[in-house]
Length: 171
Image (cartoon, rainbow, N blue to C red; front, side, top):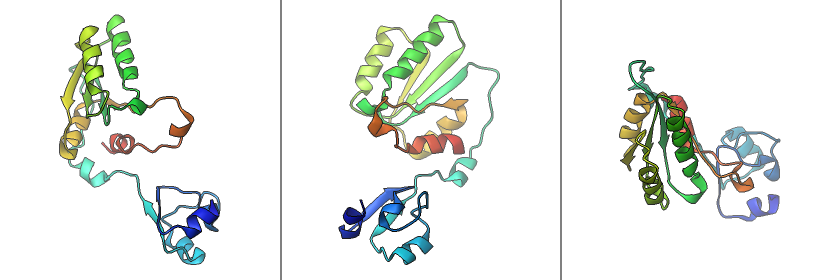
C-alpha cells in the first residue's frame, strides 16, 4: 500500500484512508493537515463524506402523527443498492396491514425494474418521485420519518460510505 500511495501522482480517499500505509498512525484522519506535513505527502487528498448540516437545518421537521409513518430512500437504483429489499419491506408492511408508506427518489439501471415490481405486486404504499435535486431531497427528507440505506451483502461494499446516509442523519 505504501509504495502505491508514495509513487502515485494523486491519491484521494473518502473520509478515512489507511494512513498507516503512508507513515501515519492507524485510525488517523486523512484530513489531518499535521499528518500530511509530517509525512511529506503532497498528493494525498481527503474528500469528506459528510452532510451540510446547515443546509438541512433550513427545513428541519418533526414526526407527523396524523398520517402513515413514512420511510424514504434517496439515491441510486443500481445493482449494488439492492433496492429490491425495499420492495420486500413494503410488501411485508402491506401484508401485515402496517400503516407505513415508502418514498423512493433517484435514478439508475434498476429503477424501471423496481417500478415494474411495485406495480406487479400492487404496492400502493410506495411513491416514486423520480430523480430530484438536492433541495428537493432536503424537502422530502423532512417529510419522511426515517431514511433507509440499502446495499447488497458483499465484502466490497462493507467499507462504503453512502452520502445519503449522512444527509438523512442531518435532516
